[in-house]
Image (cartoon, rainbow, N blue to C red; front, side, top):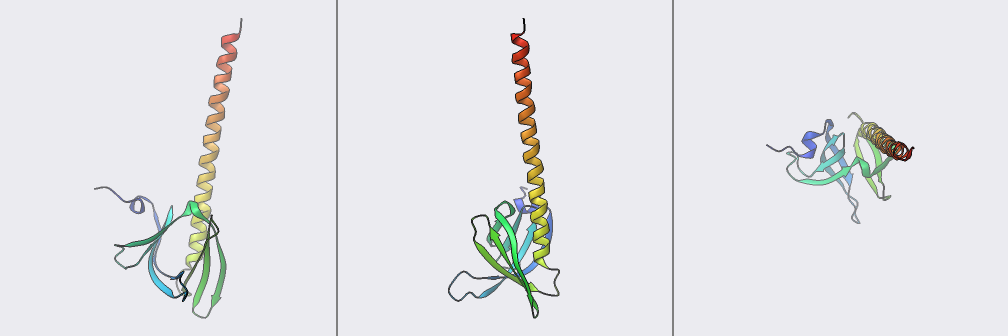
Length: 139
């Protein structure tokens, strides 16, 4: 059986969030959410059969505008193309904004380490080729 990307990534948090709609009325809609090490997945139903949106962490710039009012914690996810997506969760819930922020930091750190290793490997192979050329030209 083939695993979906969500199943192969580690699940960090699962539960409900409310997302503000993009339309004129800007209504809050309850979504079942699964945060993994790679993405935040939003589902229209509690059985997680119909994925309505997947926000990959590589396209999230930051979690912003955290505000606690009454029984809700409001926060905004800002994407790399500067789109803002508003969410809220109940204050009793372990705050999604903190878990998403930590997942984003972890993802960025993993990517930075991977980029560094890739650069280091490229530099070492380039210097190795230069050394081979220098040795081949030596009298």
